[in-house]
Image 1 (tube, rainbow, N blue to C red):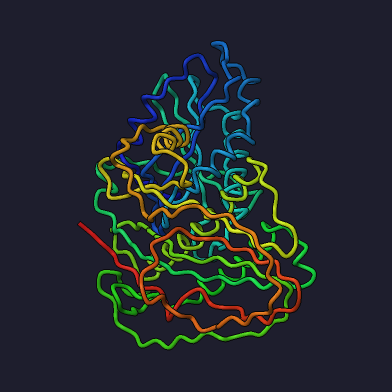
Image 2 (tube, rainbow, N blue to C red):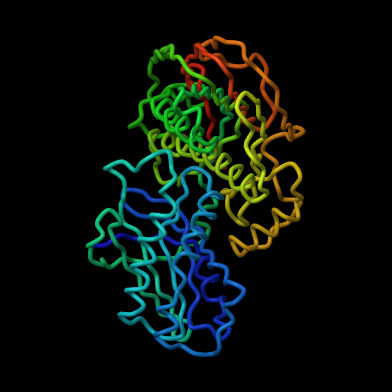
Length: 431
């Protein structure tokens, strides 16, 4: 028996309202959440057309074969940044005026594997063996309104298509649980005499990979309590916990530091969720939001051709802060990232381009307070010793993450510090 997809009714309305406007096809992404028994689709968004893709009214096979896979996968990568914890790109859809044929299915098969590779290649976490590995392809015929739904095992490139059920449900995500927390991070990345010559981006990514293991192994408190992971989230037996971090002394020639507070948010379906589902969704949002902000910063530096500082100079950059936007009729919110000099109108336009939805500027929820961006450089040749204890700030830090780069001449004794105090505490909310 194939998988069942429970789909928000507004997704069906969205697909029906898409006009081909003379194009051979329109493709896009399906967004939602996996569970062991069924998957939930709460959103669909078309891939924005390239400016040069003004096709004539034709439906030839050649045009379908010309689907720009690179463009579609980049769209998937951009959209994945806008998803809070718990939400994933579950698959792809294609709309044509013709009914399903082998050429459509082959195109969708290639696309769903390419999309999955694109959204996961820079992630700091991996799927577990117990998680669902099937992704969906959907063909919607605009003429007959017929739906063709199949799944592929994305862990097996040779897998065959399996039939799947596509069932609509009104108000699917109207009562999902919302999980929120603020994580105070202090990531110190010591640089050896070899890595000190690497690019800032490479050193940061290496440091984040080590930090991700600490997040994975952290203790997570739900409404201030530790619960057994196999218990129901809304019930759950309390556990005792004992968490300690280990200090490590390392000789290095420089360091990269990421400091600040990040607002994290995740959503899970309300169909008997487990504690482990909530913890997993929150872990992944913590990892995603820090990694995505770093990646966006490096893209911005490259786009604006800002050179890296020379040896012995200090360099400061403020990472973009997070903005949340509600989905009408749903408790779920999507997100985006905004630099201090970007306007609310630019965020609105980005949502329209990436998610094909017009949002109201007054609905934007600024998750983090904006501080003045600071880029400075100075000579620093003194050795330093950092404290390795995981220390919660005495007062809440209301700032975006600051990426601090220290390229110091000489030998520095440094510690690999943990990112968390004694764990992470988050709260869940339900209507």
